[in-house]
Amino acid sequence: MTTTPLASGRLFDAMNATALRDTAALREVYEQPGEHARRKQVDHLHESAQQVIGCSPLVFMASAGADARADVTPRGGPPGFVSVLDAHTLAVPDATGNKRLDSLHNIIETGQVGLLFVIPGRDTTLRVNGRACVTTDPQLLEQLTAVGKPPRSAVVVGVEEVYGHCPKAFLRGGAWKPERWPAADAAPSSAQVTLSHLRDPSLTVEMIEQSEREALLYRYE
Image (cartoon, rainbow, N blue to C red; front, side, top):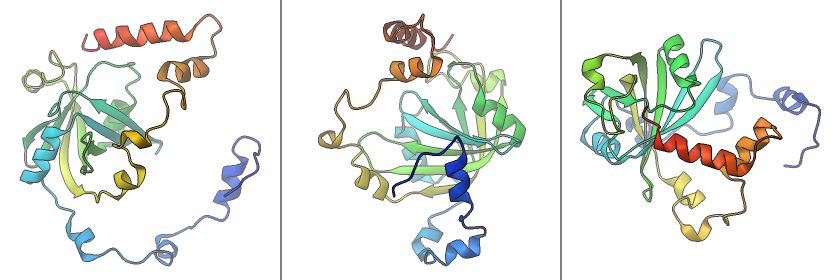
């Protein structure tokens, strides 16, 4: 689809004017899901789901604030850094980052979260949705040392929905196939993106790269 650049926000407004307005209209475009797609959603962490979480070094955390603004952030650590407390409860330790605390603010405001667990090299993904809270309970935090020393806080998830996605997205995207990866210079680096956002003439890419390296060294402080 080719679009003509418009003033800020106007292109979205133009698209939104013709957007679908209810789920009934959406279902006129798509068939109903198959029986397996419906039955794959369960309300607890069965053994296979716990194994996926135990192998996952990366989880994407989705949340929304009281104003309905959505946010997704990656959380990483050694495989199994997210702890399965029981078949209905997870704990995600918070490793110190940029201290914006977007996800934690949202969870405190709405008490809901969505998680997507990923395993490098595998097409297995696991979606977990449920109630959530932010805790500083010392007894729990002392158990969550997979990412270093006990974190300052953790997100505890009361599991309500567990769903194993089909592998089509990873197969279509070729995410784990090196021959399909873009060249190293095809996309800007993290430091280059940060520099373009800050628009500070006193900063350089090298300075931001050094700051990123130092943040990794002291990420648990």
